[in-house]
Length: 336
Image 1 (spheres, helix red, strand yellow):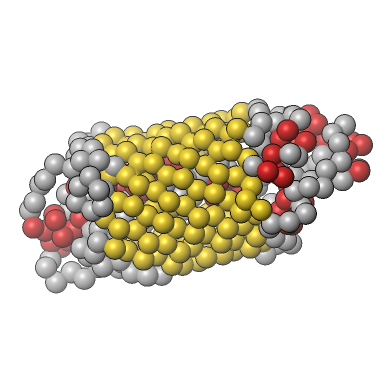
Image 2 (image 1 turned 45 degrees about the vertical axis):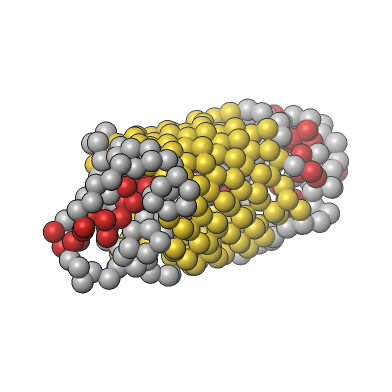
């Protein structure tokens, strides 16, 4: 049971933190937030054996487990011949409070939608307008789980209303379509109990729409686990490394933009590839049904991000924004 609990909680955590846009309304910032990784251990084996040990501590991050939301046990799930982790579908809705743009000191509320699932051992998930699939099937009862598969992202930073008048005067950015690969590994049963989990994940994205024409690489580390049958806590940390074109498109200011906005000309962000932001997040889940594996679950989380180096020196951050970026989210999810 607890293993399944940890999975469920991890996913919820990932959903909430999915930072900078974990929900559909904030796809451009999604990869900035810490996401929950996939729990490698499979609680199905424990459920089949009838064990009911108390869970202890917690974990989760930048896109950890997509298997966190597990459905309630069914007779066919206890089949000793079953090879793959059980199928499930999880849906969630909520609200995110985030900066107006990545680097803004103005805030906004955004609605969110969440979908995750697993069929015949293959996992899939949405995070904002991100969609990814794990092509490595998860076996029932395994402790260490490797993940690898494609991911597509629609980046919408500064494509709509920006609250700061000077940044708005720089003009809207076009919606960017990014395609890439997500790869990682998680291990269950690490420090505090047989059910806590640690994970490492790297996401690499490349713009295929010709907007910023660059790339983003985001490694993430997370840790967490269940504190009881109905509650889960997790923490995570990640960093985003951006290519030159990304910095030029979103953070540099040319002479025309300077004249229109009153902000100084800036070309530092697009000079070379560099780490542009790190994030640290915490999240939790609480099952209204009394069991994290099924029914309605309340989720919530907070994430702190810091824009760094050449990106922090951009006038849209240094002069009219803020390098410190906070994200808060909450909502309710249901799994079946």
